[in-house]
Image (cartoon, rainbow over the protein chains, first blue to last red):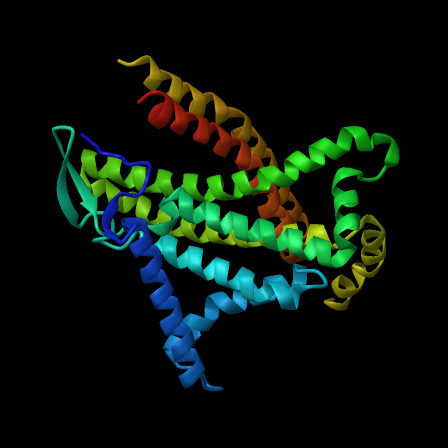
Amino acid sequence: MVHVSLKAEPLFAIGPWMVTNSMLGALLVSVLLVAAALYIRRRASVIPTRLQSLIELPFEFVFGMVRDQGGRHWREILPLIATIFMFILLANWMGILPGVGTIGLIEHEGGEEVLVPFIRPAAADLNFTLGLALLAFVTFIYFGIKAHGPGGYAKAVLLPEPKLLSPLMGPIELISHLSRVISLSMRLFGNVFAGEVLVLVLLAIGPVFVFSVFGLELLFGAVQALVFAILAMTYVVLATTSHHAEGESSEHAPEPASGSH
Amino acid sequence: MDLTTLAAGLAIGLGGIGPGIGLGIGVSKAMEAIGRNPESYGTLFVPYVLGIALTEAVAIYALVVALIILFVAGA
């Protein structure tokens, strides 16, 4: 029988705080990222070593994306977007490593023997994805208020143009703003959790079948990290550009496209 | 066989139909655009991923409902 746990299992308690296995997973990713950052700070050279290129590769990818599409405030949001991308990417790919989710303690739960793994991929815990989504939410609200002022931003959300339709569009706009938190967090959680369950089920059928989805899991891990980062960036861009500014920017938009020829 | 299991299966199965059709249309149009004009890949990429993500959100809502039926309401 396949045992699936929706929530992260608690391992031990430090005072009143329960430490769950997904927290250990997130901590491991943080340690890896900090180690990579310290290495880059100390050993970075103009001619990159292999390790340096490996660390720079995802950053350069996000850098190019945010610079081209990040709007006016791309310099300010780049650190957040790049961190979100690399954190989710590493957290997702860590779930494919052997040992993650399979090494743990056998515990008895309602007469059944249940394996509680030491490390669970961080994004397979709703707390983690919800935290990231709330961070993205607060960030785009902050940039919106910074760009338009508190009243101006509230007006842009609640009373959108055209004026005649705003009683209808206002509530829709408000709900769409609030649902961003749910869709952001649930998308990441659903994909990673579904991936974990898929691997579990295939393991129960036959271990050989697991290899057939490893490539798929690698791809999905990267795509979901990318989607989260792009959405977080786009929400900031949407919050900072008003409808009047949009008309201006669309006039200037063709310039870089024609310059590339 | 428990009815809650059937309900969860129906929730995600029926909820996947719409997003499946939508994703198919979206991806095919993007491929068409890239096929006609390969240089548009760079400009298309972010709007493409955005559209895909927003279409997929509907399926995610169905998944959430299925999970709630299976783990919260059914237990």
